[in-house]
Length: 439
Image (cartoon, rainbow, N blue to C red; front, side, top):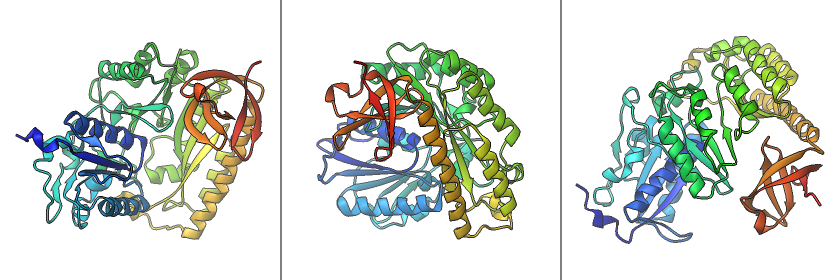
């Protein structure tokens, strides 16, 4: 039994790397510590406890994780250092070996951090507490607010897909989810906190229901009835799990935004097979065309990885041509990073780093053109903008329901408010469209 008095007058500092799911989970850890009496350290204040939530999606993410750990140790030299997240799950002994680390918690343990903080005494070597990935079973709901105005609601965790290039199933465990009833309650809590927008997040959210027997469509239908939320956004959904029924529902829903994020990863069927993806380019094109046929103003973001093992010049040329032919709004381009233990390492053809860079540049150019074209297509339309807290010079920014970035003169009275505006001209310096207020 932990003595609750050890947390009296203690402060904690937090650092999160990686995806929005990590941010939601760090927020849940912070609430646990706060409920135990631990206050968040003020800027510049030396903390008693430091929690670093890591990512491991690429080799660079691992490096950033090590840098963040050492930086927090330097900034808070007497703090009890806790490291968790995907890097901690995949390489716990490496993390524990960093001088100054006291506790390494795996994916199963991180959202129950309090029970492992027994005396807050510094350890000579980091203590490792993890669970084998195939035994990770728990799902702990979490929700966080970013530094703008959105809330991120964790609805699902883990992944059963085991794509050849990816370590996330090994870091996060099998697919699992919360119940719709519990998630609706969390959305209602966001309403009470004054939130206007919620983003549904997870590792593979379209696979929702593995734990409870419900479906992702059931979830969005239930959330659509939550009074007080202006809009929900759906984060990344695998194309084979983004059903026509979900698209149809979004087109007629009260609150779900006409905004989709769909991972393609490669526009070559041969490369998709090497990646062990569960769809082909024909299915992907169908999803884009289905969305645009009933939601012509929908924003569609697409993830692509360049330079994976096996991506020959011809395969990349096919991919580039396919992507350019799609009626999408923006690309998120990633250069392939080799991850230990993945099946992709058995593929012999390796892409030179300089070629990866050139391929990234080619797709980013396509992305820029598509984004500006989409923005320009919205000029003159009436849209609802949720303005954010952050001030950029004399301007503030916000996003329309279909994810067009807007700017306007800063007005504190508009922060976290949904305001109807007309979409004006594109401003290259702001990388946004001007918000024209009705007279």
